[in-house]
Length: 204
Image 1 (tube, rainbow, N blue to C red):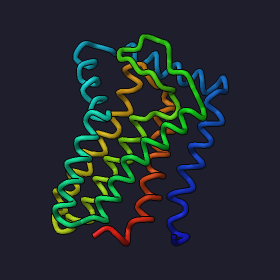
Image 2: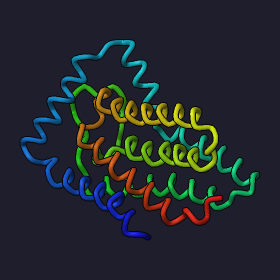
Image 3: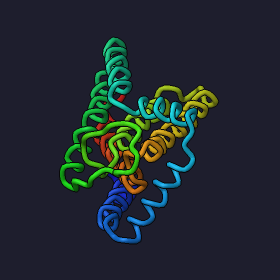
């Protein structure tokens, strides 16, 4: 791996470690609480329905079928390297997130949760997995849609908005703190970048 790629891996990991170090401090706890309470204050029936739908798009129930359909399509097109890359991104992110949650075992917020979640809070799985998986789809668009720049840019913007909305939905629904979301995004990006660098020669 070339040295010019290292900052895109090291900086997100350092940011994650910083969050892991400071999220228990009184200042950050206070910030997390203020953001959570602010999200609760703006709740409406329409917003709640919207964010429940958004959070579902970042869940296993939606991403797993998308992964499987793309996997079959890539295998039919004889793009085995890309299929493996997509699979490692998808499953690797989820596995790493589970390990990190078990390591930090941060309890979830206990203030008016709108959906039930059982596992630990830090880092957010929805944020991490959506950054890795939907970010992977954006990356594959760059590789396979080089000539369709307008379409590619439009989809990239939509995917970015989706990723941000998924993270926001977790705070709105009361199941994650703001720092959980930032940590999830940072590790999701790092995982995607590392995986791409490992598989870039095999992506056709």
